[in-house]
Amino acid sequence: MAQRTRPMKLGLVLPSVTRPGRSPIRWHEVGTMARIAEDIGFDSLWVVDHFLYRMQGSEDTQGCWECWSWLSALAACTHRVELGTAVLGLGFRNPALLAKMADTVEEISGGRLILGVGAGYHELEYRAFGYPFDHRYSRFAEAIEIVHGLLRNGRIDFRGQYHEARDCELKPRGPRKGGPPILFGTRGPKMLTLAARYADSWNAWWDDTRNSVTALPALNALVDTACREAGRDPATMERTVGVLVADPSADPWWNRMPTVDGQVKLTPLSGTPEQIATGLLGYASERITHVQIALDPMRPDTVEALAPVLEYVDRMIRR
Image 1 (tube, rainbow, N blue to C red):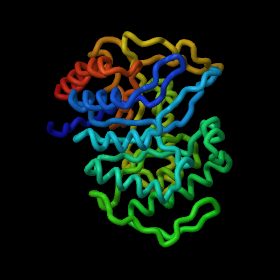
Image 2: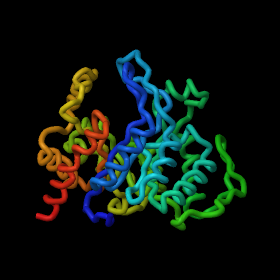
Image 3: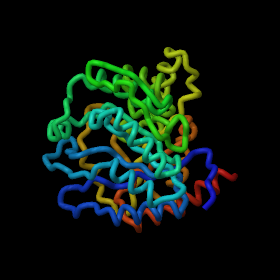
């Protein structure tokens, strides 16, 4: 299948989290969904990075498969789509080893990785698996310096308060000399300063935007400011966003989510294929060039049901 040239790429977030009371997600299902998504025309596939998860207001803990193992398998069983992490918690892995892992998946995939990173936020899984939760910004700042240095330059000699990589080299290298593009998932001012220094693209998730394009001007302004303060042209920072899309068979759990005073109610994108396509393309007005669709529920049939949406997107773009 030829590579598509949409002005706004469309990605699909694959499942790795099993909700309480449901059967565990199995790899054969995910592999099937990945191949369907590639066949019907998605540009990218994404995995989230959690070990355990508990939604706000819930007492039930959700189980998760380890995302990098998922990603490595996806690199081997797909051929065209880009593969991204949305986003990887840098506190979970040694940064020099992570750079080595990223370059290796680059090799397996033929240069299709997008390395999405963040500082992590869910204390439950940090404590459960024995990772420190303190000084997350400072730990992240050191880790991304190591990861970026190794992927872009192939070597680094670094000693910090939390991490070190002494006279470290990446050998051999993957197919892209400078490694994969780096994506930051963040909106905090200190993290945006680091994004302006190290990131190729920036991502907002649907819970950052309440799944509405109207939230993006304010978020884009924060990214623009961080870039200008770093002496960088804001136009060089790609903008991406995760969007929640509901299949008609979905259980409307979003209606049970607590909200704080003044917070917009979360509403997934839904409706006819044409309505969903129109909603997705609406993000292009706010400089979004890549959308990650979080589909609920995720099954082979619900993924395949998105084929008309992609067809409408391509038809609207050609108008």
